[in-house]
Image (cartoon, rainbow, N blue to C red; front, top):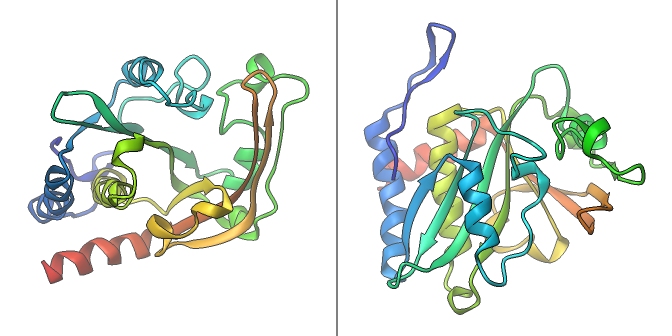
Length: 239
């Protein structure tokens, strides 16, 4: 795992976070993964992430949100989680990034295609489109963390790994960014399980990316920053 730092804005510390406590929170999930034969690590180089994902059998192509050739992620604005088995072979992947939507909303970010391409005029196909009708997406502004590209190897499915990696993400997101919102876009059949603590609405992303061969009709799932803090701190009190 990686060292975590206080949240800063300019020279002022805007949120004091007990990193020792957060590390203990993360250790609970790290240990749970280890019990299932998975060693977790964090990475920040998305060129490396794409290379690993491409070399991983059965892993679908990474969405452009997390590909530097289409949507570069600045240092400190994204990370990825990898799990390897006892043979050091990739068994789990997940990517996370921070969107600065201080002058926009998540709905606007999706519909402008800027969530997928840093420069839609350069990279988007003329027939690319994204419609977001989820009402709450229009109110999601500020620091918005987007989680995606989750993949678990078939022989490790059904062992609760998505919940474990969600817990890791919960702690890292809180410590790195203290965001206003954490969200994901998922098909309806995935609403249970790891998203049981999240709000959800249909119409999160009706998406077509022609050259990526992507056609989605996903729900929006999210928690607020205060809810994220409560989830982490309540867990810390119990443990």
